[in-house]
Each structure stands twice: as structure tokens, then as C-alpha cells.
Image (tube, rainbow, N blue to C red; front, side, top):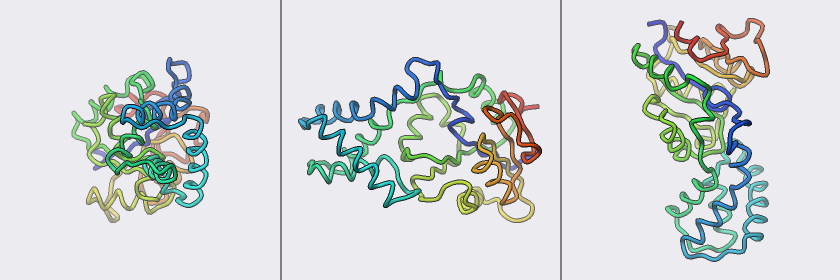
Length: 235
């Protein structure tokens, strides 16, 4: 086998833009506070929608400023719950974060994604995720489970959980420690669509890289491999 481990980015690499889908990612994101408001009602809490929306916007700005790369939706909902004085524990707050994140749909995946991942696993490759995201890990895992991808990924690293984001070498070093593959003989491939965060970040720690072509048609040789369709990784 050529690689001991293959890590993937998420959005833009496994998921496409979904702009032509109904609902689209933008539509789902636009309903985030509505979902939280509905869930609060289901918990027996009557909260004014305009107040909830205003406080969510305000706390988003505050949390992003204070938490930096450690910002995620769970920490955001913790701040909103505290500011509004809602009698909720971490269990309910986690539910609010999941509602705020919302669903991800299989139709947003690039064509052939599940088949290609299955084929890689069948060939004996171990797969993982390293993603820059504001989604808490439990939300990301739920989303991957919903589209049938979670069983493929043994290791999943999400920036908002650990406060470290690509292209920081530390997030790739963490992945190495989790795989137990370190040192000069490591054979790890990173698959992504962002030149700086994914390709430069991974190559900077000695990983091989594969670049999904999209708005940028080529890395001009910076990536070891470039592709349009994920099935090309099998060739």
C-alpha cells in the first residue's frame, strides 16, 4: 500500500457547494435561529424570537473574538443560554448547538464520494478527517453518520474542538500522534481543496497531498496529485 493513512478535508472536498440543491447549505444556515427557537419551545421555554436572534448575533461576535479558532456552536449556545438566563444544562445546550448547526444532506456530497471511500477502505486504507469548522465534533459526527460516511473515518479532528486550525502544523502533528505514524518514514496523504490550509499545511509537515480542483484549476505543481472526481484517487 502506498499510504499508511489518508486524511480528508470536509467542505469543498467531500461536500460540494450544494448551491443548486433544495434546500441549499445557505438556506439551512439561514434557519439556524429558527431551529433553536423551535427546540426551546419544545423544551417548554417561551423565548422571544427577536431577542434570541439579536443575542445570538451578539454572542457570535463576542465568542469569535474571545475564542478565536476555538469558537464552535456549542460554546456559542452556552453563551446565549447564560446571557438569557435560561435554566438549561449542558445536555440541553448540546441539543441547541445541534439544532443551530442543522442537517447536512447526502445530495450535497460530490458524486461518487461514498463509493470511493468504500473502495479505499476495501483496499485496506485507513481514513480520517481533519476539518476547519465551527461545528462541534458531535455535530460533525452526526452529520457524517446521516450521509453514511461516519463508519469510514477512524480519526476525526475538528478545529473548533481543539482551538487549532489548518495550516497550523500542530493540527497535523496531532493527527500523526493519533495514528501512531510519526518520523521520517511516515506515509500520510492529505486530500483537500484549499491551497494554503490543506496543501501547504500538509506538505509543510512532510505529508503527500491531493488537491480537488474547483474554483482553482491547478496548484501549479504544489500538490502531488490533482483531481476533479474523487474516483481518480483510486487510479
